[in-house]
Image (cartoon, rainbow, N blue to C red; front, side, top):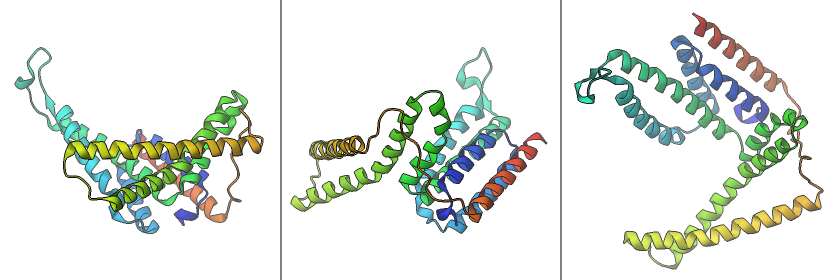
Length: 244
């Protein structure tokens, strides 16, 4: 169901919930944790996509634990301080909020195609076009960037495989660095070629500065309405739990 939702619903819900995540209390964080776990199970996303997220959170936990857990007198030296339980609680609360926002973002990228991500985000920039035409240019740039990132990654992987087929990869760090630099050049040339072709296609179709408008991906369905309702109820609960 998450894969089929309108990207505008997913983008708006992610931004709305991420904002409320900074305002709610621990009850709201617990509710969001359960909801996120349910969404992960419902979307059937593999756990390995969260592996790097766990590594980042571990390092952030060590940093916040050291920064907030160790306190010292105002006019004293650092080594004259002591570990604070309140500091650890504050660091844990901050890390919990960050972990939920990162988890929701990772889930969003896993169930939304790059092109749909760009068009969903750009949709919310459309009202700004009335203020400045540069908003349309930014929306177009954002859409194209997210569209072509997977293509660049695929081309980089293809160049890497071609290089491995030519000869064995060197073991020396210096030679490895030299090989990587040599792989960057053809990747840049391919990217510039794609950018030039894209610019020509946009000119042929009559695109100009300030004229871009986000396309409607598909008509809103009953699933989209259910998603909006669920995000709304979720957000209200976070606000209520944050006020208690």
